[in-house]
Image (cartoon, rainbow, N blue to C red; front, side, top):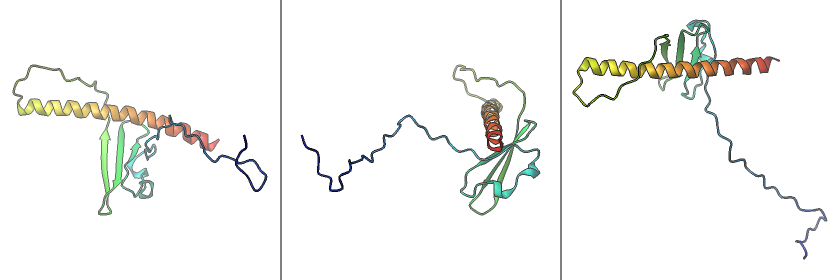
Length: 136
């Protein structure tokens, strides 16, 4: 069986590159460890609207920064506590008072902030290991 004719006399090469379907894009998290809020400079915040997180070196706060459409920087500070997170209990359906609803919302917010603190701890470790790898 004859192959296709090649006028240059060289074997034909396939330019098909197999694609690894198991690769996942890691979401990009911007920020770095800071000693204080004064250490955060505007040029360290991406101007595409992405959020930046700056955990304090003592682990007590996370500073959130993002550029807004009006050209100002949105600033939020999350204060981390050591309080245990209480899990909501599935109680029988009863009308809740406004105070009970507020307590439930506070518990949910505490759980979210606790998870954010854990995630930021992991990210801080990754930043530190990356920083060490880049300086070696």
